Length: 267
Image (cartoon, rainbow, N blue to C red; front, side, top):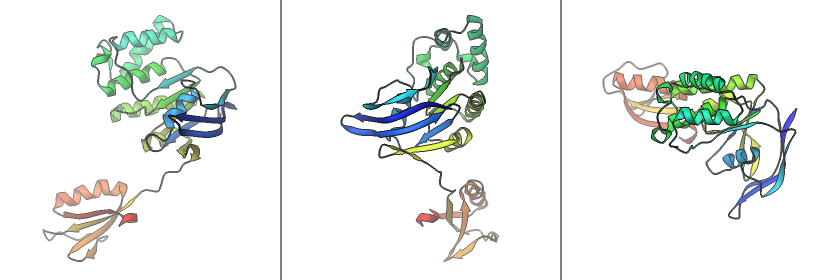
């Protein structure tokens, strides 16, 4: 079932076309990621989808009124503390006081910020501020959730919690739109991946994992691995990206000297 339809949507900034005549339908319960370089139009598209900004031309059609929640990349530090801010935002969403209090405590514990709830937001780190904004968006289950670089500044433990929470929303048929650079987050959440090229929405597939060509010098008469080949006075080995992160530090610790590291495609 469709929930949002873009009809000939274009957006210009200072005469430059950012989005060009987009025609695209999105379904209720879909999880969509927009990837690509900074400035290609990902955040602009999210803001148009959520009605935060209007397109220069064209229109966005919604099949019914939806509750949108939006997690921006950057939040504004306030003089309020996090508990006051979340309480206020929960009330705006129509939640009861006891429900707001319970959810704040629960989410704060999940995201490891219980001790920071009563600290003024203007003194919090970027990562902690981002957690507060994430919690605000989760207090009441929205129909559509928009995420603009949602893991910016967050630690790995909080990232895992975040992925789990978002996938719980997907099970409730919440529609997810996300602008993101982190491949692991996209692969954990999104069922459809797009990029924006020359103002158009294009389906995107990640490239296969890189293979590296590693050149090493044996300075301590170390045993030679079966996968190594003689490379002049050195030795070479081909390792994929995941193996490189594991094997290369071990080789260096054993006494091998790194003399070259090349992406096989660009060798």
